[in-house]
Picture (spheres, rainbow, N blue to C red):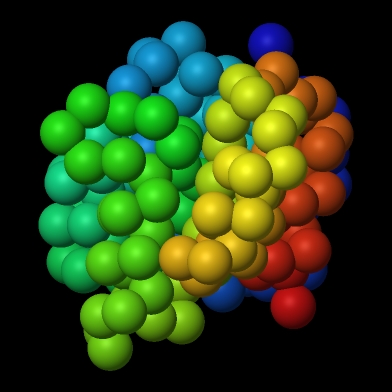
Length: 134
């Protein structure tokens, strides 16, 4: 199902790159369907892969699960934010837990936003537009 949204104002320029990092394939599919053709979607299955892809592709925005195999979202976010080539990259942490300590820990490693799963496609679009829509 494709959500009806208007194309972002920068649609005449190169598509913005968004990196989805989650070991849950169904969540990545949902995000891909929601963002559709308006963004270039990159995907990673875990934090280590995310750091590698972020350094190579330089996405505008990363949506990253907190709890993943091999390297947590916290550690991957910290590495992305500490690297000179990716320090500007916006990172939104995703979690199924609505605990305050998750949000505080995400902010401590440089996360720009935080979303609790499940989230609505409209909330996802609003977050993308807020962080990379200027």
